[in-house]
Image 1 (cartoon, rainbow, N blue to C red):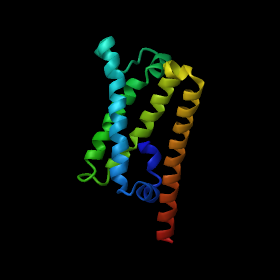
Image 2: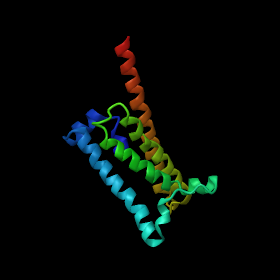
Image 3: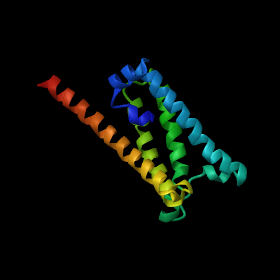
Image 4: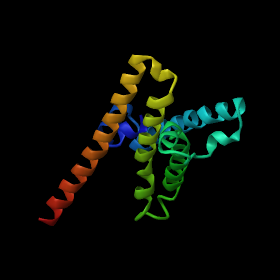
Length: 151
């Protein structure tokens, strides 16, 4: 939900009656909590190795792509905290969230038990595609604005 809101700053602010960042960060906090609980419960069931990315084979890497996604998510979250200090670079690191989403959706499609339900699989894959479309739309709109300013 946090990534889906990013291209629509004005609309989100109007719909929720709160500043965009407050809404975005509320969704992001919930997402990070849920994303953290998933491997945490697996670690309790198994062991802490569920946090360590595996590079044994190409297939295994992608099947367990949630592991590097977890690392990318926390790098992206950390970048958000650095926003005030490093205005120039924080967005590049924060955009790692989209790479993490790719890793997560591949992991879920390859071994996710919830994805055995066709409706859930379709809904989450569509949400992923919409997130990417929103990312592209936001970049395109930013490009158009810069082009308009320089002309």
